[in-house]
Length: 478
Image 1 (cartoon, rainbow, N blue to C red):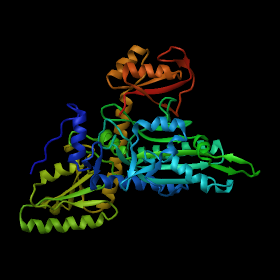
Image 2 (spheres, rainbow, N blue to C red; image 1 turned 30 degrees about the horizontal axis):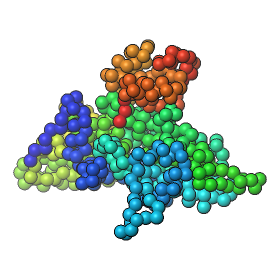
Image 3 (cartoon, rainbow, N blue to C red; image 1 turned 90 degrees about the horizontal axis):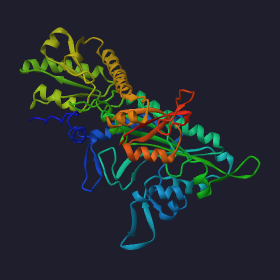
Image 4 (cartoon, rainbow, N blue to C red; image 1 turned 90 degrees about the vertical axis):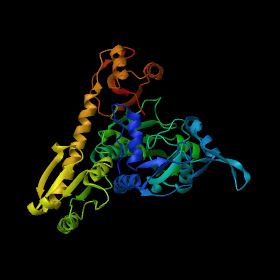
């Protein structure tokens, strides 16, 4: 039994990614073009992402609900900008039960419209506000070019939808959820995202402001990893989401929506993965520790397995798997679990039994450098501390990689050279939809975000040369 080696990242990044997703058993291609089957290992990773986010949502007062998969076509047509933005990606149902439908139904691309309709029924008074609801769901967007996790016709996500009494409360909610995504990405996924606002041409269809967390992948392309939208009163007007204020005056609500999807699994793969396979952050890894018993003879087996069982029982607060297969070699097992990105491997053989020790191998530091021998005594604390060390090191490593590939060009020629070499550009920018489109046409780079953290002062716009008051990130993106 031999697992084929992955195509090296440096040789063909796209092949490396596609092979890794399938060989690590995260997902596979479905029989429907552009769709994926998320396999149990991939779903376990998604469940851990869900758990981390869901606990954060509930801690800030949000509750979960479920809304229909099908949306009447007329609902999307109520918000002009929204329908224009989504119309090329819609899947439309025209026949049901063998008969043509009176009104076509859209397979949910996002739920602002149907949730807006329900909110108009549920909200009467200022006492009903704020209304803070999230749903975990699947959505369909008819993409032309697809890639597992990153862009598929059907994908899984959470979408939060809230209604508020004032503009200030809606903006506060939009930024609060952005900060939750940022905290999750950095502290659980070890992905050093940059939070910021989208430009007018890049914002969500129907939003007043869109905010994003942008991440740099291992090939230096950007990935929009989560978004939060202040919808103003656009959907409230379209769907009559009104409330009586304290003066008994009818007012439109202010609404928000925000989402993070299975695309984030792609972000984890491409931020941390190497030529051996996945490198998963301990906080999210389905299996945090794998124990590999090593023995040749039956009398060795009994002694080794007694220690393995005891060590496993001591690691009761950690997600542990014992690989006790006898039909494959220890080397095969090492490669198997390296490919799947398990953060820490424990090896226990006859010598370890005799010395009361355990061999530890870190996934984030391949080879001999990542290997050490520790006493069996106090193994639970040693392993817990090591997992936190790995988590911190992964964030540091990813942050250093990101910062190394962000540049501040002195002029537009240097800007183009950096973009052509797949770097990010951090530049002064005077907002212009026209100039943004020209840059995209000339370089294939897009304005990823206007970071919340601004340096202050003024500078010369990289494209127009005019005085600018904000700095932005440009990069090629997925």
